[in-house]
Length: 500
Image (tube, rainbow, N blue to C red):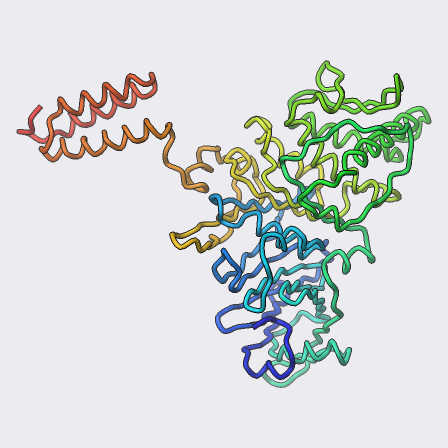
């Protein structure tokens, strides 16, 4: 049963509202099925738009669950939610669900056909307002609470009816005293329809497989804002490279004119924007980076990377993929909000699908921290298989998707990222890998361990174990050392009377 239904169906549901005070916060809780609970937190502060949770019921491959996305406590640093799990665990489908809630359902529709039995909800926060995207009925419901003090109980059916009557719902405590209103403010189709008409906000999607290419440009030419819904597509638009190249050319030309004008730096919009993203790319790649507009033989955009000047198509694929995501994001912000003095600081929901593609591990380690600093007001969701990406984030949350033998996926409770974790920690503790060698060597090591146990039990001779150790040790110097230590332990722990 879904959140929105006919009034006659409410008698068959378990619905309730509990609003309580928690450190100047209210908690709006409603049940759309027994034992399936969604909590929505009302905060006094005017925080930007962010995704708070996603919830599933009968939504394959996931078990019925709710995934919370805790808010980051770091200031001036983007919030990061890392999503990882084995192939087939639904990582990209989860990302597609978030994109659908934000405004573009196309990619989710290609991966999942909706029906009445499948329920998908995505919760959003914006100041004292909360919104719920109900995918089953393609509804985006907005609620607001005017008073966050006290503990209250009400009926959600009244909230639904308030959509028709346009009256706030009076919430009472257990003594019948009125302590504030929760108002159903309206219904939309998605986040973009709710947020964009009111303020500067953007939501974008990128795959790590995208790569920038050279395009014809003019020295200065307005760039059309484009359709924000297409910014949430996992397939790159055919016009995206042209948008990026022209936008970068406009910024570089604008920066040149600002430099010549001698205006104070704080007034030089183009200079500040270009310096920020060029510094971010230099941080990731370890070499100075900048764009340049070249006039001959015709006006075109090139990149200066280290000591080389190169056309975009001749840059390394890893660098082209970074430009096709981080720089493309800035180009879209720039085109969508040309009058904003700092478009990079606009609240942003950024969905990244395996951004480590094409990147050397050294670059993988730098990418997300650089993005956190580049887009300080963003909420970034990253689907990744890379232990280098996972271990690189000091401030954020890790969500591990685990698939059982029946193919059902369950999600662990969010794990806070911690400073000082190595990629080895990520491999073992997060990705759950314990094998470090090639499959053939791992098979030989399994045989060695089995033989070692039999030797210690007196069922095999030490000579046979030494022969197996010699075979394994011949594969590499590192394995030779491992085998020497193993044999030393065996000889030390060998019971008396066991055959050598």
